[in-house]
Length: 390
Ligand code: FAD
Ligand code: DHB
Image (tube, rainbow, N blue to C red; front, side, top):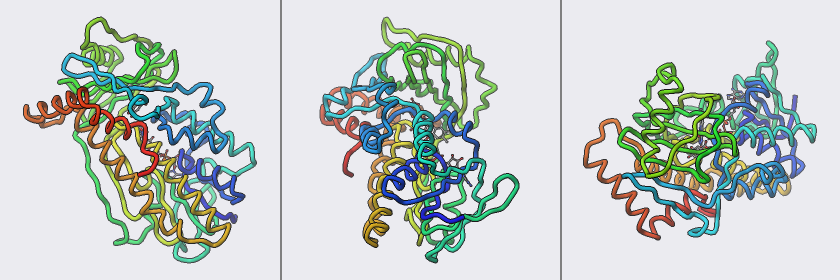
């Protein structure tokens, strides 16, 4: 099988890249290890930055997003028995949209299949070869058979556990990483959200986040131990802990409902540089991971492939290599801004395992500073809604 760009992974990065390339008349094949059903129902991120919404609109992919997405103009910080709203739109002129990652993925798959573009589901890439030639190959396995996809370029969009990053020879990539002594327990509940905007809560028992997916569905998160077993968290314990960490201001209570899904996500910060080797271009979680506190993961994945799509289009249009050559450095500027912001939000809001009283005082001071300084609040807000140019 031959195509122009071989794309490994049908997450937001790989699917969006396929769509952008198609709009430039460039062919691609997407290989995805999981089934369509699986990727369309995998519950993950929920916040789109303004720039991601603009990208989806420009790409003609925002019909359902515009109907069903929830536009938010502020977030709430809850700490020290008080609540403070950060008025993001007033401070930056921009907003975020709450729209589940799996909805973005469904829209991207529908758009791709509507133009007959191939996505091979249950096709696992097993290795990459010839990346330093002008005809690299992706080896994959589908339906018990081994096959090859020959292409001009490979886009490694296969997430943290994919094969693409591992195809780069040893010594080329530099890794920067940090792990955190906690994880998030995420819950999806059939409960109408008790709030219109997201609540990020710093509590002595740990972080909690109140989010939503629709007027009927709440999405909630709790900081838990990194090795926590989900079996230790029956629904009643989850609700009790959420009440403790969130019902800290007068006259406010959670709405509860049946838990539809729950899972535990570990936290890490991770970057490898550069994001390219020869004819392999890496994007999204394959090259960088952020802790979810800043809601940046999916947004970074989309921003990477917006750059990569333009760079590949310039090469196919006129043989230009400057954008391809600049891809890694340009993308990494945004990546590192998001790394810092995600680390900063995480550090400000979580209870650290070995937290000493000094650290807790610094957190409260930082939160009070956000609540009282327009300059500091603006810094939080412009990072949260996404910086147009970094
Ligand atoms: P992915 O969405 O991971 O897509 C990669 C795709 O490649 C997958 O479909 C995978 O099946 C496929 N693949 C892997 N290996 C192969 C192979 N060998 N061959 C073929 N296909 C392969 N971000 C937030 O902002 N907020 C959150 O609450 C949040 N929660 C998360 C929870 C979990 C469990 C995880 C893993 C991530 C979460 N994230 C969250 C991060 C966000 O979802 C990711 O940043 C986003 O999915 C990145 O998109 P991507 O396309 O780069 O990678
Ligand atoms: C959601 C996830 C996040 O990581 C975040 O910071 C805000 C919202 C969500 O899933 O809704």
